[in-house]
Length: 169
Image 1: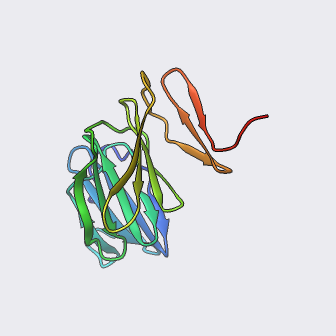
Image 2: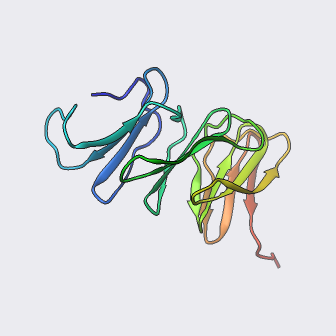
Image 3: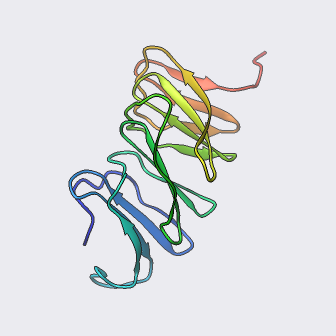
C-alpha cells in the first residue's frame, strides 16, 4: 500500500531495492527492499519515500546510486538511491515542456525527448548541467529514445530519426 493511482512509470531495481512511483492522485515514490512477504506497508522494508516532484508517465533512471526523475513542465530531480536525500529537486530544464517518454541514461548523460520538438542532453551528477538542446521541428516525442551501438533512435510523430557520428558510404 501507499502508491497512488495510475502506476504508469516502470519500477527500476538495483542492489536488492526496487523503486516504484506514481505521479497522479496521491503521488508517491518509494524505495522498497526486496524479500518481504505479505503486506509490507509501514514496515522497515520501505526504506524511504517522497510525495513531491514525481513523474506521471516517464520511468526513472537509476545510475551510480542516483535516481533521476523528470516530470511534466520539464522539471528534473535527482535523489540518493540509498537514503532518498535529494541532490537537486524540481530544477526546470531551459524550456518548459511536457514529457511522456522516459529518459535514457548512457555514458554519464541523460537523454530526454519532449513532446515539443526538443531532445535535451543533461550531464548526470550533483547538478543538472544541460549540455545540449536539440530541436527537431514539428515532432512530438512520446516514445523513449533507444540507444544501440552508439546510435540514438528517436521516434517522432511522423519520422524515425537515427543520430550517429558514423559516416554512411
